[in-house]
Image (tube, helix red, strand yellow):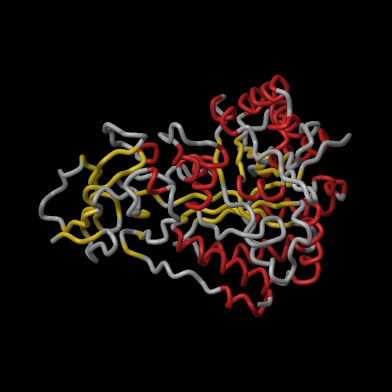
Length: 437
């Protein structure tokens, strides 16, 4: 019997027949592609992918869900988010849309409102949204000023355990690196991060003590077996060259862990020679770069009564061409740093294609929300379609890129272990008790 992709058979063994897959996200299947899209049948057995076969060749005895050339993607990886800040906009909006306005608003809200119950309520709301959209891996930065770091990491650890069968979660400690002068605070923070299996992070800024800060951070990470994920050069100032300093520090310290740099906006404001030297250093140091196109377009180059002159994003194509691992992510969601968003990687991908010009061609574009972020997060088995992997898939009616990128794909179907999940999104009214209506 043949079923529609909108309602795949409730069976232990079935086929997603006549499907279109992004070739960059498939393992162990070679076929001719058109704009990086290939045709295939996906055989699912007992919640796992049993085979990926040429279109039309799946066993006849299996129930079939006819995709009618609709796309099938792996579940998404969204590895630069801020679950602890999410959805505070109704009670603490950004007064002017600027970076400083966001920083001050979040600071006031954190001090006044961030109890364990408040953070948990908003985190869970965000995760329910992400899960419904088809996300399988999330990394979140957690504001880690004392004593908030203990509250947020405790809540995160509880939620990480509760959600382990739905979304793989990682947490990064986010704090101004200037605060490392408080040795007791930094030692406690490192201990908390290590205990919770997180990453060391922080906000980097050009200054006379930056090299000391980076050396101290990397040394602590090495001694405790931690990876590092930093907020870098989130400014339109071409003189901000923290990314260069980070690459030099990684090389100087011979740091062997993973280092990720988010934002890196000022790189696009520098002259070509200066930027190219930094790109080469980043590649040599093995630093990965995450671009946050929606948030950076919202914040960067925002001045009163003036139209923005640039897009706010980093040199994404140049970094990728040099061999730097690159990805895009959601960043903030309905908070003073970004007033919108819903942790939907389809939206992030669609906007990234437009803002970063990831089209012409689109052949490998799908990697930026699937395989690339999964590799950066140390989860290379995720974000891909492979025989033996769980059948965690997202099904779309769109057959070609022009169809996929022209609509929000609200009718997508999400499979987890081969079963259709409930894609109902949580109602914002659920948050009224903590953030107001």
